[in-house]
Length: 140
Image (tube, rainbow, N blue to C red):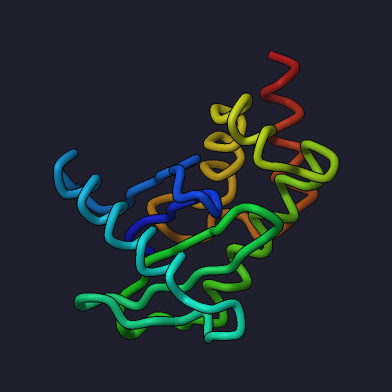
C-alpha cells in the first residue's frame, strides 16, 4: 500500500497516512486530486479505479470515504478487506465509530492504524490482538 486517505463527503481530509516518501506539496496535490475524483463518482460505480500508475481502492462508510492507493500487482479485494478490517477495529474501539470520533480522537485513529498496518503491509490480522495492544497502550 502506498498511502491511505480518510475524508468526508464534503471533501475534508480526516486522516492521511503515507507509506512512501512524498513531499508536502505532492501530498496536497495527490489528496486534492483523489478526493475530487472519488467524490465525483456515482454510488453504484466500482470501488476500484486506475489513477496514474496506481490502483485506487475506496469504500464509503456512512459519511467517510476510506481510500487506499496500491500498486498494479496488488489485489484490490484484499485492500477492500483491509479497509473493512480497519473500520471494524475503529467500531470496536469507539463503539459505532462516526466522523466526530475521528476528528476529536485522530491520534487514536492513527494509533489503531499503526497497530494494524506497518509500512503499508498488514502487521496483525487478529482484531482481538490489535484491540488488546491498544488497551494496553491506553493503560500506560
